[in-house]
Length: 509
Image (cartoon, rainbow, N blue to C red):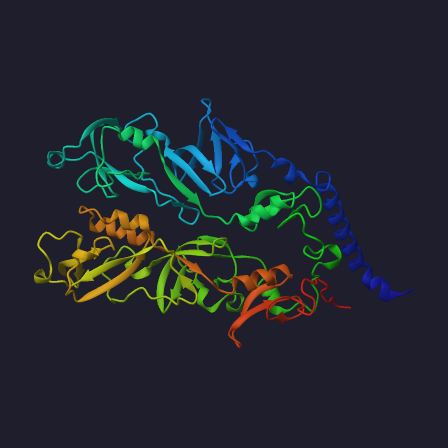
């Protein structure tokens, strides 16, 4: 009897059983192999909004047929609505070619002022305003002293408030109970608000632009596919009527999409770095992170050196030019990271004064951003009496009130001889909220907590090429350059570079 054969028999039985299970699962799934393609074929139409497709989806469509938070609903009156950041908006127009949507708050469509006492805010990693807008602020529950100073109070009846004031710009409540900021389309009288046509101005709405790259969906539809969303990769994917049923585009060939005979096989020859950099990782309140980021349980060679994350707190921290920043948002599709200075978080008076410096080989500010200037120790002689934008600092029990903040629009009145100055990037919306003469220290702190966005460039083109060849992105600290970790060994750019796209990985004999 061949005892060597018997010693291998249990292992062979297990392998045969596992292979049978996999085969049965494939058969089960293939009973409707194009289910994703079939279920995402409809476009959304409701009233004047017609023929709208991805990234939007209708209320009856599966979640994977649209981008998250792009759900459109149709009312019994044939009006379209979308809910963004806990506020419901009436959709007035959608232009998919320019990626612009015109919306108005639903709570002002039959009222003169907002019923929901919530500011109009957006996830700026996904949406941004077009340039053709201005902010107005509704002030609720103001004391008599404020009412006497403003002739523009009117009866609103919202939440029991009999009189409401409306002013240009975005500002906080001040001495009033609540403030609600609402964007409107720019008018010829941007510096003032006419109460006569206020309801019409609000109901005309404003425009926002969604920021995701439309190329992936265009490539998909051009090759006969239907666009959808992958919750495993957090990005647009392509559903096809035939094999491969899930891909970047439906023209993908076996060379682009490895078949069963070319899938990487786990063996004794697995490269250590290839294994370590598999999948995505979690850091504090962020999940599905990948190259160029690393940190927490992800080894440093799996990411770019400048993108290391400290994952020990509630939010990740990133160190840029030896300074700590809180990570507020990461958009891997648009290569955008939103950060806020850690030393200015809930604090306008840091112990160490320094400017916001970056490595501009890796990071760039969006063109729409501008700088906020914080001026410390200006002295009474250096300041024109009555200058607004003042804030207090208390250091070692001593209070100082000769400190000021200025946006680019108000920098002309900044005192020239302050002891220290800090420059901090802010977005356009935040800047507008600080230009009114009533902007307070609380408003300043809120703007600093919103943070600012940065576009990154960290060999992302090389990473895409590496991933397409079956590799995993990383960094070679010896050569200080990008590395593509492959099944057999690392390569500079892609796996098996003698034959780009070759998926024939070595397997142990």
